[in-house]
Length: 69
Image 1 (cartoon, rainbow, N blue to C red):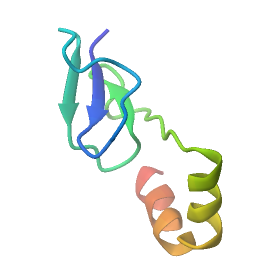
Image 2 (image 1 turned 180 degrees about the vertical axis):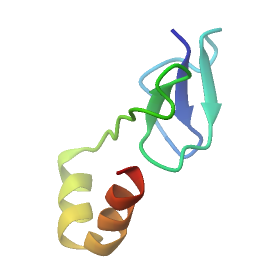
Image 3 (image 1 turned 45 degrees about the horizontal axis):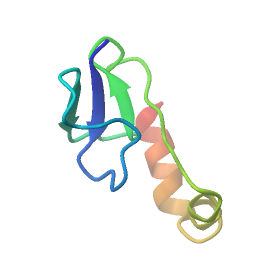
């Protein structure tokens, strides 16, 4: 599996130095794979970040969900 990590992800779950992990700009989400790039993405959020996205950054978060759809 070839994992893609968004370039803006500050603390990636996977080690970028691994051969199967690439850092690329993703328009939606923080993680995907080469095989799933056009199908599925993972958005990782802390509790505080999720709260901020829903309560304060609602319009930006909504636009991201619409783009992902």
